[in-house]
Image (tube, rainbow, N blue to C red):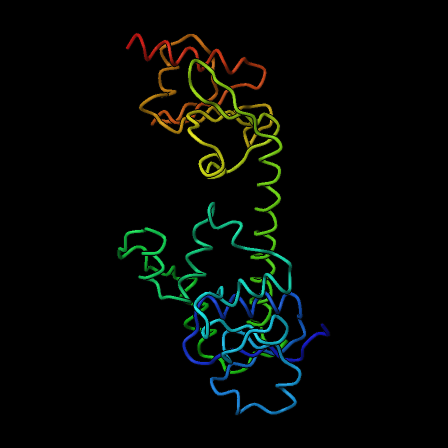
Length: 280
């Protein structure tokens, strides 16, 4: 579609959904003006004819209107915006990054119901907003009725949308690479995941593979080193390397991590820890 002159959302108290929807759209359409108004009848015909409308209107057509409140089965507006303007199905990442699912469900059902649907126990900490999030949403976005392109906050929102989108794309690319690169191998009776050419966040191993005890991957600080990571220190604790003659670069105080030279045979380190455990 042609670049809209306006991006319209509701006024008053803002939330993650409307803020992120606007931010993503500003990244795509950086010259658009943001209008926050609770009654669309108050807007001129010129504005309504040249706007993308998100998180208000009770309509969803995948072109101009992107509200979800009229149908609980619809994803929140920022998820719809990602789908139609960037061809991204965010739900693909829900099983790995549950915070995406939470923000989607939160605006549809409220925070307590969202946590219940995700089988997460409610607590004070689950409802905590960081000072950064609270400032951007409550102190800036919520208190503005119009945000023009020459407003410093317009640029902040656009940069936020850019960062959010790039992060999602990187996660999707990383997951694809993870599935292509990572191998599974049994060493000393323990299921190990290997990625000697690059490192990945631990959450990928936990969410995309089953019953992995040890991760062996390239160190993200020095490509000449390898990280040996235990996901269960009761079974594998690398502090036991201190009882061996094997050389290592670093062992974490709680034993979950050992860093070794890439030239070394990583299997002998795992074998040594297992033997120490048996003897202990």
